Length: 308
Image 1 (cartoon, helix red, strand yellow):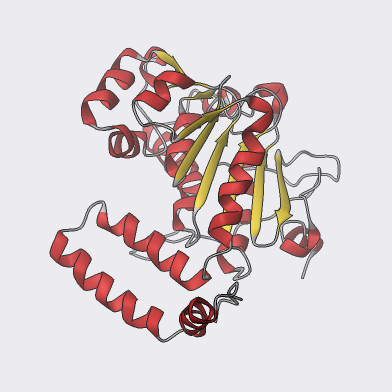
Image 2: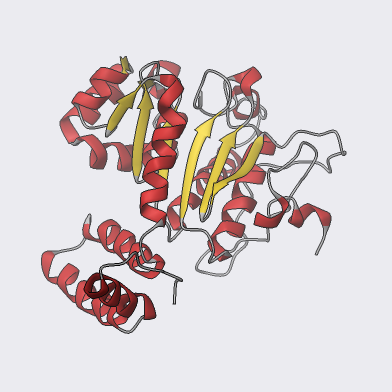
């Protein structure tokens, strides 16, 4: 295994500046190659990756957007490392919860404008391919089987707000602000925001936020259901980690299947949801953790869940 791939593996700890992970070629359903989010030349050991990976507790992974000079804008190195890291986490069965936050004073200010405007003379089809690759890279967090928590420490703007909406749970600092501000730049929501935001806060509120481009504070975000909790900034990570630890303490198979069931139920019929529930319930009953949960309840002791 190369040093690059080891840079995002769990055993390696935080991703360090200069580590680069090359994503495997992706193909669409027809088998054609998908143009990557952006072209990045070979980096030197001093090149940034703009993403840190930490392991604050057993089964919990913390992803820190680390580009504070640009308010954690989604740079080319960050996007490339993000996609590779998510693939690593997807294959790591020891991971039970993923928490996403930002370094410095911002959560994420959206796409890096220098990359977005990096090919002003490119034909429309090239721009489309670039944006699709970028969107797919960040949306890959929704492919994880484990729950995800956004710990929103500061401004979540444009694609930064969309990233927060990609996560299952959103907890905000009282200093956080939010804006779906694409229209103010003469563009449309990216990263699936037009699909995600209405499902989080409802169609009418999403239309208002998107078409006005207005910025709202954490109190308003809590009021409309954009976030589930607002806490003082110095308590944000502790709060997010406490939620993550509670989730991680439950049987891993049951957590993964329940998370999948909740996601599928957002767009499925009741009948289809019941069918999926019955299938997953049968699988859950066949696990060692289900037996352990019952035994621990009867014996009045703490359970020992092993993901078996």
